[in-house]
Length: 141
Figure 1 (cartoon, rainbow, N blue to C red):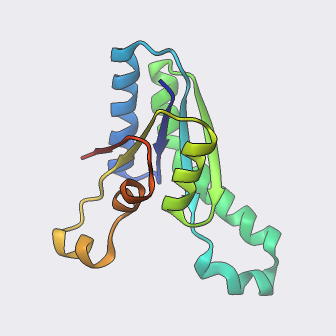
Figure 2 (figure 1 turned 90 degrees about the vertical axis):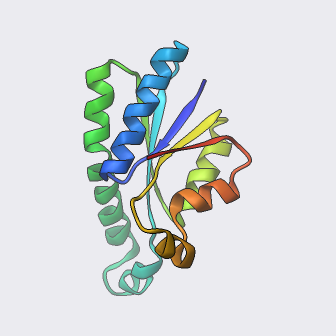
Figure 3 (figure 1 turned 120 degrees about the vertical axis):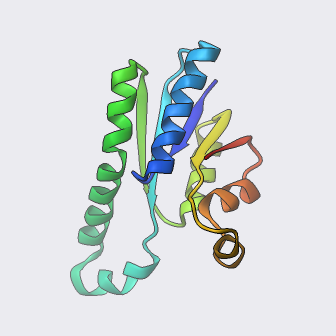
C-alpha cells in the first residue's frame, strides 16, 4: 500500500506520521511512505517581483525541509523507508495532485485542533483534501 502523509511539522501532522508508521507495520506493506510538505506562495507573489522568483522558491523549499525534519526522524527511528516531496502551490490541491501522480493508495493528514466555528468559516486543509480527492483520505486526530 502506497501511503502519502502530509506534514507541516505540527503536532497533529506528527501524529499522522506515527499512525502511518503503525498502519504500515500492521499491513506489512514494506512500501515506502512518502511525506509531502506544501507551502502556498500566494502571499509571496509580490515579493517575487522585488527579490526574484528563485529566492522566494528557495525560502519556501527551506520551510518545507524544516517541516519534514521531525517526521523524517520518526520514520528513521521506525526503520521505515521513505521519500519526501516538497511542493509550492495551493496546499490541498498539491497534496491531491501528488497523490494522483504517484498512484498512492491512501492520503494521511493530521486534523488541526481548531474549533468547529473556525472550520466552518475557514475550512481546513484536511477538509479540502477530503473534498478534492478521489482517493481514500485518513484524518488523524
